[in-house]
Length: 333
Image 1: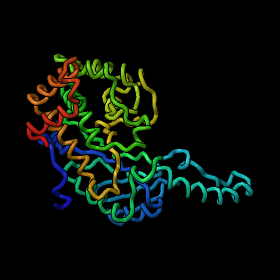
Image 2 (image 1 turned 180 degrees about the vertical axis):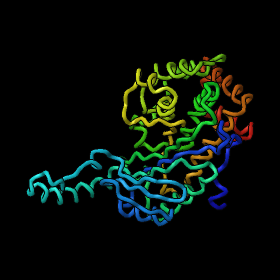
Image 3 (image 1 turned 90 degrees about the vertical axis):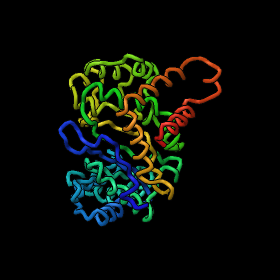
Image 4 (image 1 turned 60 degrees about the vertical axis):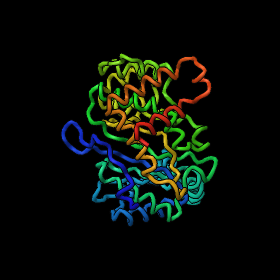
């Protein structure tokens, strides 16, 4: 199967303006030096690189602007060659930066941040990931201190509270299944980047008659999950919807406003020949399909609530297994 056939498409491909929905992709990896990665990505995407600052390069392509950077602000901001420093310090700085560069490129992930791409152009990411693997890129499994992710920022079909709620409910129901599918590496299990939502929030979300307006939707979530470090992070979406309300709960300059969900759960397992970008994307499409089929979402929510009750069946069968069986019965996997 070639790369253009691997990425499944959801049924709901257009937003409320009638435009094709888009998704931003962030890929963390190692195994290549910074300059080496920039050179390879520029060649593979036929782009023109421009160094913006230390360890930050923009790459203009026909698909938009990609950014390649070292995912560590303190290292990116270092400038020991600043002319305002004494000459002796600057001379030492040259050697110090060589050491810092060597260490940083082996411990801190390099990151490729893609522009918002139409869903139908995700073959570009599929091909890029496969080619970088062949060139020696490495993912989370290579070292205990690597905790590299592949993050998706899918645009929502619209920003109506009822639509958002269906996506959140589908994610809550599928969380255990998705976590098992993505085989979260032990290094990421030790971090706080991909925590599940508060169980009290999930119970509220999955209740039979949960139908909040926009303000209630935001407040309900933020009362229990006032942090970026969630497997599905809603703060960029909330910054886009109502930044003033968000700032009543969270004030973090790293939050970027955008009409998307921020899916942080998956590992980047790029050096695994059985793993592809589409491995992650196609599982997300399962969530998309369920969110947009009300009868299936209702059925799955009922099963979820039932699984929270005390019974012999629930003691002997995991929710993940129940989810897997239901997905197979409904033809999703």
